Image (tube, rainbow, N blue to C red; front, side, top):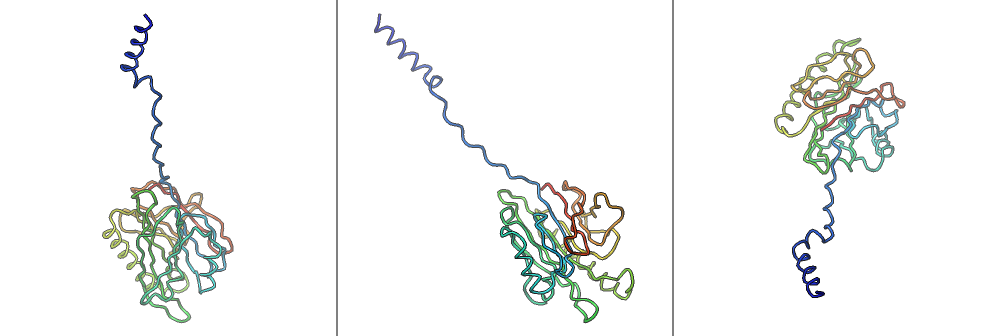
Length: 251
């Protein structure tokens, strides 16, 4: 009888062994990358303002001279990287650099374009700068274009309007080219446009209104209509004569 019991137990184990055995440890789940990012813009009053890490990608204006450039690098955390254009006809482009959080974004490429030369006592040379970034851990890509147009063209100095119009024409051309050359990237434009009017941009870009603010300020943000994003959110001036602005985006 005892032998029959033992044989029965062995037979059951053979049949149900896989069920009776302790379950194998589950494979660890793949970490999900947060697709939410923030993009900002701030005119720093010729570098007089403090540089704050208020967004994941930031277009700056009026980063004037080496002291302002060093101040930007010093005041932002070490995990930020910066694009300062270098190359032929780039003198003055350091005034519109772009910064990003390197632990979230990998730089793929960057570039600049001079929109018109400077003139002593009137304006420095003006530029468009841009960076193409990849959200780490994903295939999601974003291009942020930054710029600063001549002041006074729509107030006390109408003779400056031709420079302003030239700048806008070259900005729009650059945006179209970037769209064509990088169709897999979401493109945004930020900067000080020195005009209190929402401006037409190549599709699908559209002006982003400022939450809780009536009308249009001098600082603009343009986002594609096919990408979920917030209104522009007004932030402090931090020592400038301009507020900073940022938007939340889901790539």
